[in-house]
Length: 88
Image (cartoon, rainbow, N blue to C red):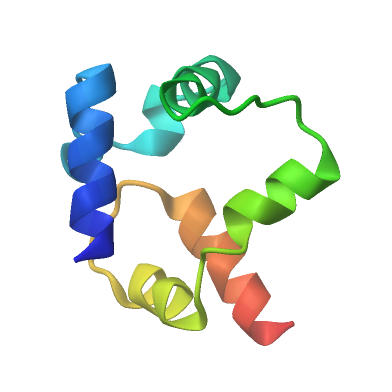
């Protein structure tokens, strides 16, 4: 349910439907899009370690497994990254 709310927020604010796109191809340099999203919630993105940790702290082991088990082929580098995290 939480993912749906986040996807809908992004779709509403940026006009992009992540469920239909290959994020790896669509966002070669994602910083401007991340900055726009954080502006909507009055936060800043400056690539500081604590900000990166704050964003990724919301990713659960179940999220990683969902990505790995997904038949969706949109973002293979993310899938490989998640596989490496599980192995680590």
